[in-house]
Length: 279
Image (cartoon, rainbow, N blue to C red; front, side):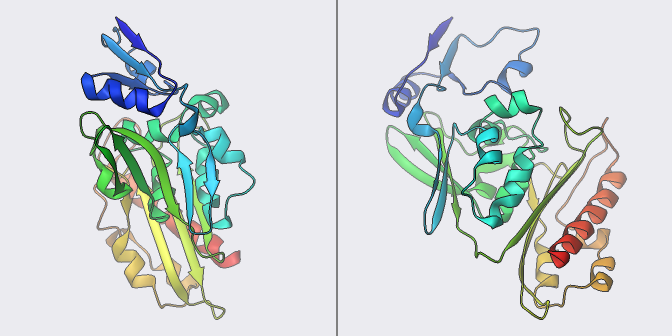
């Protein structure tokens, strides 16, 4: 077995450009997936590349290095209020031990339909930076995630960062997760929201995203369009129903039925919108 642990991005990209490797960061997805079977012959451990760690908050962009852990995101004191939903989601991913080791880049590259970090990132219009020996390119997160365990990563590429346009300061963010227990559980449904209201309570902008109800995380674009320009009230929120979730295609599995997921999503969306009203 070949094991390589580069300490610079250039060295990692050089290795990826010359051969095929299993890339490992925190290992919280890779190792459980290989219980009872051997790891591939070539493992590239990128956990020692310090330049891929950390959060930079600029005037226009929040840049999160691919090796930034969920614990770092959860406890970061300088993130804008509109990223609160992402911080809440970070505190629900696995248990604290998983949050201390698991990375945002690894979570996205694992491309689980139930990834809890994806809905808040979708509401934030996040993009990913991909690097190879040929250079760098950027994709929106929605274009990067192609399906269950499928991404737009090309051979020789590494996800190096997540970039988020800084939302307006008056954006109210929320996140909610439904599972069989609080931690160490795959979501039955998770929902994220980002809402901006005018002083009169009219919806100026709204973004809603869901995981565990489609092959990838999905924005609820139809419902967003229907709510923009409306006065957000309890009576309006009560009218939201399964007919508004046309982007979703939930399935029956061991965690819940498609019908249950759809109904749960309606309830969770309503609750997040009422929370936005109160806040």
